[in-house]
Length: 157
Image (cartoon, rainbow, N blue to C red; front, side, top):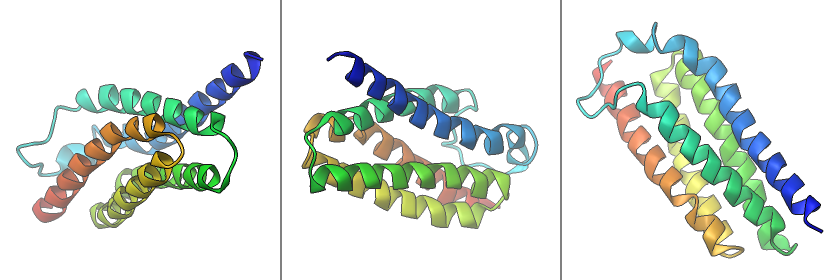
């Protein structure tokens, strides 16, 4: 039955882009105000790059989650999906800590944990669906870059 996989894909898209929207509530108002006043490293991209990259990444995450959900039931599938949801929650939390609370140090602590959780998610997903896991690799690369930005912001401000 084709309806069930399509419905699950729509749910995965809603989950991932819902998380994006929750993070944007904290982030968007702070970009022209608090964030604009920070000393930034030379490798900071222009502000317009962030929403482009994040929309692509959330799309890849949604498709990855859908692939995991469509995989045969089992303990590894459950672990991969649980880790996925945990890292997605921490992703949202980072926005609220870094931007919402204007806490560069708190953001740094949170993004280190996010890096670890995303790596753990990829590892667990690899055992379930290698393509689903590979879809998360650009996300890991981007948040590693974001970690470097957060470290630089912490040292400059």
